[in-house]
Structures are given as C-alpha cells and as structure tokens.
Amino acid sequence: GDSVTQMEGPVTLSEEAFLTINCTYTATGYPSLFWYVQYPGEGLQLLLKATKADDKGSNKGFEATYRKETTSFHLEKGSVQVSDSAVYFCALSGSGNTGKLIFGQGTTLQVKP
Amino acid sequence: EAQVTQNPRYLITVTGKKLTVTCSQNMNHEYMSWYRQDPGLGLRQIYYSMNVEVTDKGDVPEGYKVSRKEKRNFPLILESPSPNQTSLYFCASSQRGADGYTFGSGTRLTVV
Image 1 (spheres, rainbow over the protein chains, first blue to last red):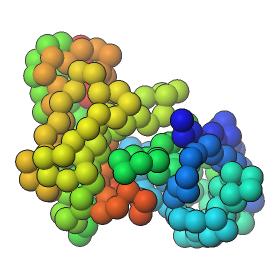
Image 2 (image 1 turned 135 degrees about the horizontal axis):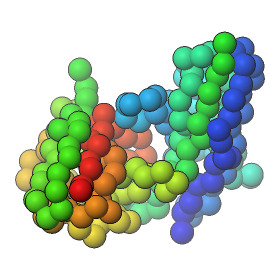
Image 3 (image 1 turned 180 degrees about the horizontal axis):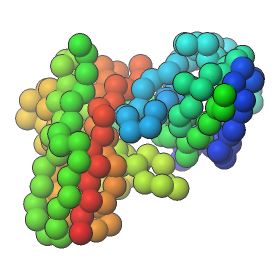
C-alpha cells in the first residue's frame, strides 16, 4: 500500500543553519505530496504542496521538489529561525477517491539561538 | 476566517461514558476526515466522508462512529470509550483531497 517514510528526529540546528528533512514515498498512481507543520499545542498547518512530478512547492522560505524518479519530496530551508521549531510531517494523498492523507511519522525540529 | 472548529479542546472522561467530539467547517468543503495522533504511531485516519450521508472507514475505525447529516458538520462519536482511545484527535476538511486539508486545533481526550 501507499506509505511515507521520513527521517527520524529530533533534528537540532543552530539559528541560520541549512535545513533538510528527507521524505520518500511509495504510491500507486500520481499522488499529491504535502508538508505539514505542527507547532507546540496546535493543529497541523499546510506548509506547502506539489501536485505533479518536478513541481516545486514553496512557502515561508521552505521548499520541496516532487521527484518522481527518486520518489522523494525533501523539505529544505536555507536559514532556519528559532520560530521554525516544530514537528514537520510529510504526507501524500492516497490512491482512490477517498481523499485520504497518508502521513510520515513526523520529524521534530529544534532550532537553538 | 476559513477554519475547522473542534470542541472540546480537552476532555477527561471515564470508561464507558458515551461522548461526542464536534467538528464544523465554514469553507463548504466536500471532504471531511478524522485522525488520531499517538506517539510513535503518527497520524492515522479513523473515518472520512466525501459528502453528505457518505462516510467510510479509515485505518482505525473500531470503537468510533461518525455521521454527516450536514455538509459543515462531522461529529465523532465514542459510544463506549476505553483507555486505549486516549489520544489527540484532529478533524480536517478539504474541497478536494489532492488540494490538501485544513485541520482543526485538536481535541485531547483522556479516558480513565
């Protein structure tokens, strides 16, 4: 079945460091891919998305490119801030017409001043 | 403001006492879904709905019920809660699943 694998955390970085969180997926068909962010005590917020191969999603300095050849959707940011500390989830839209999201396990990012 | 509203935010209850977690969205979305989030298990879908009166099971439906009598509302019902249903629950909605979902703020449920 469809699945998403994320790098395990926690990831600890200093402010202004470069961030990469790896995400690979297994899916039938052509799913849409997403990154969600969960700040402490809050719900999930859609950070960015890509709906087809080679699409690049971007928002708030974060970017991810839909790579069909490597089945990957890695999240990157050039210079992280303390306010980026959160849990990041990679997800894909499942096959069929269920509207289902399949999530990775989540990666905790901690940014230190 | 476009949003998904869940209530309550926090709930402590006893085993076997029926409860309902409400979910409402103001975006006229077709799709609605319930997830539970547990440490080490990530987010798992409980039930989903593609439109009024159309619901189906997700990955972990046991012990839960839902209904979709109106487009905006999608309550989650626990007829006889048990401690293994202690979790953080999220409701979400989307016009079209492939576009991404808007999530509610979550309901932290503790069953003792």
